[in-house]
Image 1 (cartoon, helix red, strand yellow):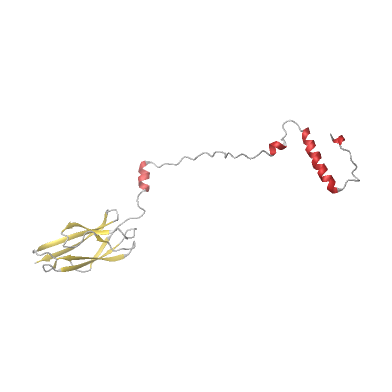
Image 2: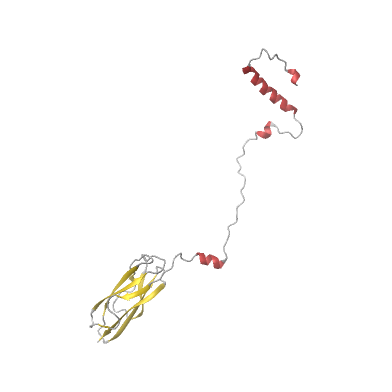
Amino acid sequence: MAGVFCFKMGRMSAPKIFPLIFLLTLLGAGCRARGDVTPSDLFAPPTSAASPIAATPATSLPPNEAAASALPTCTNNLLFIADLTIPDGTLANPNETLDKRWRVENNGTCNWGAGYSLRLVAGSGLGAVSPAPLYPAVAGSETDIRLLFTAPQESSTYRSAWQAHDPAGNPFGDPIFIEIIVP
């Protein structure tokens, strides 16, 4: 095939030789050996179908591990430190308003916020509202809890026990008490 194209190299300018070399290259591609790649193999038209990607199956936890992962990431706790007012055994007059305060520590890892409460767990409520909001406290800090009570009319010894509860209603920590004697 190369004998078909005869020309004198001396008369051909450089701009004319490059198209000629390209044409000869294309014609020479027609004389390929078996197993060679054709230009149509190199320039296959794109397809619109995406190749499927195998889905990776999700790993599931055994039932006991799945339940454990649902546990809260913090722990609630309340540590009683001291009675600040009205020590146990204080004499109170009938119908007297009693301003009881306790010093406690939030020694858990949860911050007490909205939804935390103090609830009556034993004895007489002595007129205090239950549940009462638990004063917000950052984990690791001390705070004072205050409740207002009213001494009953009848003579007797009265004890009222209160405990902190989380927003789900679960009790936690030390219970706190007021104990009065109405003569």
